[in-house]
Length: 86
Image 1 (cartoon, helix red, strand yellow):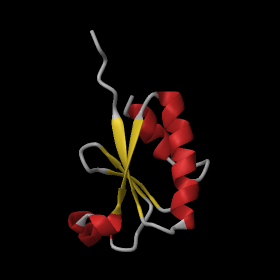
Image 2 (cartoon, one colour):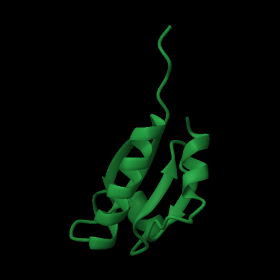
Image 3 (tube, one colour):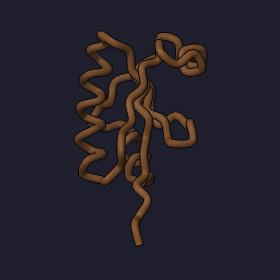
Image 4 (cartoon, one colour):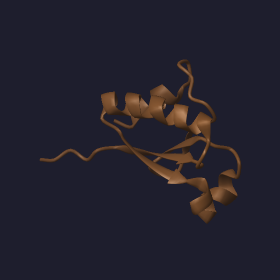
């Protein structure tokens, strides 16, 4: 039986250096935990653009619930939320 891999969505913006650093940190943790990361440009998705505007980066559960907004630090609760996605 094949196990369904959990995923999160990473909302970013082209040229956002804070987003680039956060994505690197998120992908590292996700790889260890077996969670897939899908990236989406906030400016390419009207619904996300309306919802978040300039507030990037954002990490969302697969069902659209916000895990984290802004830079991902070592002490953020985003890691616990990511572990729960396994």
